Image (tube, rainbow, N blue to C red; front, side):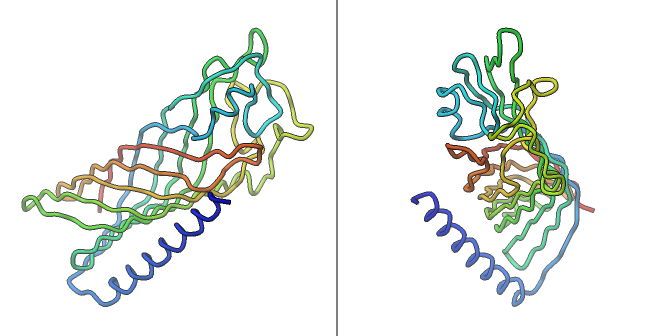
Length: 237
């Protein structure tokens, strides 16, 4: 109940922020709009894995381990398109990207010889950061922003694949020891907050982005939430 109330409050705050940004965007002058491409790399994991690790269960599946295991951060990446709009001191930076996040599993043996190495989640993300730029020189600018993100797994939504779902699902080990969430009992939708800081030099931006999931992504006993840290390289046309 507390999680649900916090999520509802966060959504209201974000909605109000977006409405305010739209009003400022409409009224302000001296503006410009640029498009770009982005490549980001970093690391990610699920928050809330400890309960599954102690219970010797792989979340969103019928798979069980022979002993307790642990989880950790694992490389993650995304590739997408960027839209940046400036209205006086207000920066609106939105990106639509194909993202891959992972959670590393340590000692997650399904039997004496086979183990699960990681959980992989592939989504399409829409991120909208509201912030500002601080000029350092003619060519250098500091940037900062925050806002919401929405993630959606179109592949799982279209195929309905759930071969490792909890009820009556497969108990065999996935290929290469990688459990894809589109083949398990996970939600198609994710929602959370984003924090962005970085620097721009002419038409190149180097940024750090933290994404904090607020919505439970697994259809299981204990909730899981996305956490990711990524460094992004953006080229504006």
